[in-house]
Length: 158
Image (tube, rainbow, N blue to C red; front, side, top):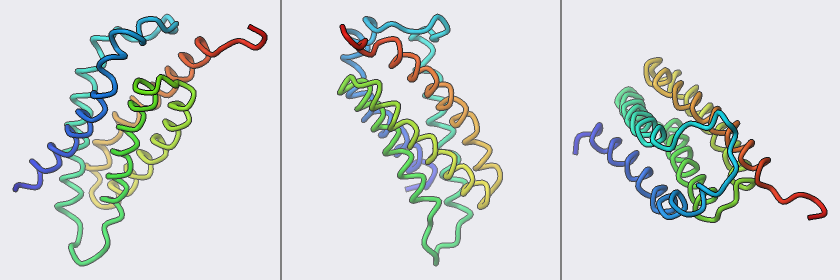
C-alpha cells in the first residue's frame, strides 16, 4: 500500500473513532452546555477537522518518507501518541461528558502535538510546518474547553 494512503487511512480512522463517541452527545448533551459567545458554530468543526486530519496525514507521510529505515523512529511514535490522545479527548469530553478531565487530557495532547511538530520539523521542515495549523486549532480548542468547563462546572454550595 502506498504510504500516503496508509497515513490518510490512519488519520481518518482516528477521526472515525472519535466520532463514535461524539455523535450522540453533539445532538443531546452538547447543545445544553453553556458556551462562550465566541464559540464557533457547530458547522465549522467538521470542515476544519477534515482539513487538519488531511494535513496530519501528509505531514506523517512526508516525515516517514524521509526517515532512515534502520533506526527507531521516534517521530512516528510521537505521531501515534498524538493521534491516540486526539481520539481520547473525544471519548472523555463527549463520550464521558467530562469537560474538566478532557481539558487535562487536552494539555497532554497539546504537548504531544508540539513535540511531534518539532520532531517532524527536524526530519523535514515542511512536515513540521503542516502541524502548525493543528497546533493552533488545538490551542484554541483548549481555551474553548476551559471556558466550557468553567461555565458548566457545579458551583460550590449548590
